[in-house]
Length: 211
Image (cartoon, rainbow, N blue to C red; front, side, top):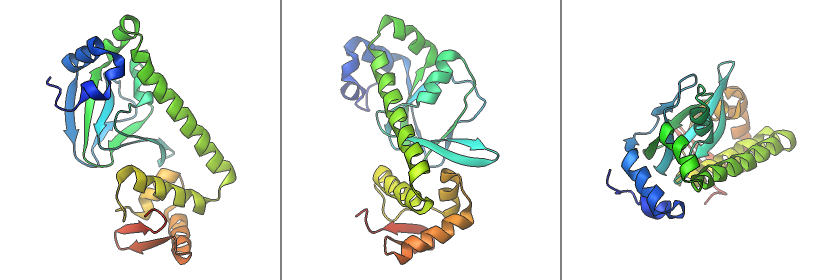
């Protein structure tokens, strides 16, 4: 596999030998927006790393979706890493938020490299630290912030992650990601619009404070 995606430059800290092994052993694929990459209950045989684009990771609880985190360029899915290394079934779903290019590293190779090249742990420890910080932030939002504030922060993050404003997003999608009802989201988004924090269009929402 030729390094046409700057893998050597992006992951230089892993060392030339390991990076070359990753390039030789892995596969690069590009997906359109909204494509499912991982489903709950499947065994993970490859560990994904996002090279370009954005991937949403979520779970389903009683048929409701709950956003866990986004995977941005040069990041991996720590839940997939854990499932792959332990040979467990996936506990999450992952799908592309926009056109995305991913590097898929065979999990059996990673298991071997953890011993042979301990530096690879740096990549995944970084992901653990990042997701732990995000988890604490989510808990703080749930405890201390009202839902209208959570919706606004969610939309601000979405603009920052995607670089798009207005956002093509529905009230139902917001409700799914935040684990609430569409009717509640519709009422609170209207409240935020009345406060001149955003503007609703038939198929999108524009944030004023994100400009």
